[in-house]
Image 1 (cartoon, rainbow, N blue to C red):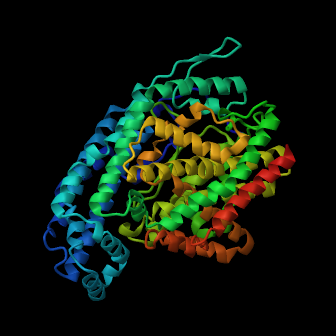
Image 2: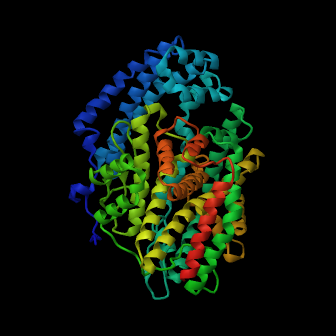
Image 3: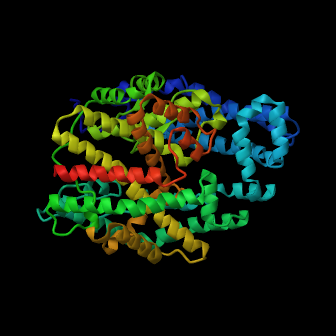
Length: 602
């Protein structure tokens, strides 16, 4: 078992093997500096095509290839600064470098914005002719056709330029929300009946809401909510500004609604969007109510309140593993994916792709960044729990996806729609769960894995879907020019929570403040896409279990395709047909089966 120290070290003190190897990006900070300097000058390799992008097939191809090369270099420079700061945000050099690279990237982006405008001056017939004349343009087909789909909604070049110039201002609502949350919002401590005082912050509240101590959980919730309540009108005004900005843009561009505009970017139809929300909200609710009632019974609660939903069912069982043991679990569970996939996973685990150290100044949470032409980098904090194993497997799913896409596609075609992004990561979690369940006879471990899986579904199918439903309601109101106020947001949130949980959970006034906790509302229609990815991986992992190699081949093929296909086509290639409700219903039924299993074991 891996020993985990409670002492938080400085970045310089952590063992080097627990950190990522940034020398794979740049040998030294000096070589990064030199590349940053070069980029500002070498933007000319692209700007020399200004005013003549569409003059011939050859010129268009040369311009797009040059743009890809510049973007690849720019991505590496950006990524180095981003990763340095994520590893230690207290380092003033990292702070300064992140600001410097941000300025250079903004300048380059502005200087190269002409490419899109000039391509949009071409028609479909001309582009198809150019593709016939210049074979390399076939590799840019989807990029070009996607751009043409935006043509009806494109404004005059001067207007687009003005809108782009207001980019920082347009991002202000999110910046204000985040700044207030991290810098201004202060929570008082609270005292439990044993006389103990408990400090509270925005980040530590999540620990309290998952506590087995009912008094601690509920008092933390009350204290947390009281502070949120003091900020609700300011936060509502901030969010209303974000929504109004999107409504105005959608009208300027001629979209039927703000939802149409936001879905267009994801290449998702209204039908797909509504189906995802409606099916889960309707069919998952009965299973979640059963889970809530199970918790109420096992925990001996007279009433099940909203603040009790994340209480643990088996708080005394928290399996511990070392990083090496976790790596072996992951390697064993993913063998079915084949040698090419496994080679990436092995490299990721052993070649310092993962920064797992716990040091002062390190960014919280977990992510995977994938600079084109190098290899992915994963950030997480290793605490020695089996839960960390699932986080690592999840991020390695992203790493394998972008490694395979990067090896098989040029940069312009690497990233798929957000609708698909969470499918490869949750696939790894599904395979890991099934592997552990197949290997253990320990009843408590069996229960723990079921609870871990339910946690994944809760996060994606409950938390994010309820966020998505609030967005759907808010955008419908905004399209009718209804002012978005704190009272409306709290009322709508309470109403949808009450509809979902029914008589299984007491929804108090404070539950209506939940919308204030999440940054996703400032990221377009992001929340519901979490459930789309998990729907796809649930269906595809079942096919892999049933069919073996043919299902694996289909899934690997969809990962290699990167962004060359629209999300519906990508999922179809992976063996999942999202044109019907069937995969969603299948995923919901699987959640129901997990709850069935828990009911038998408690």
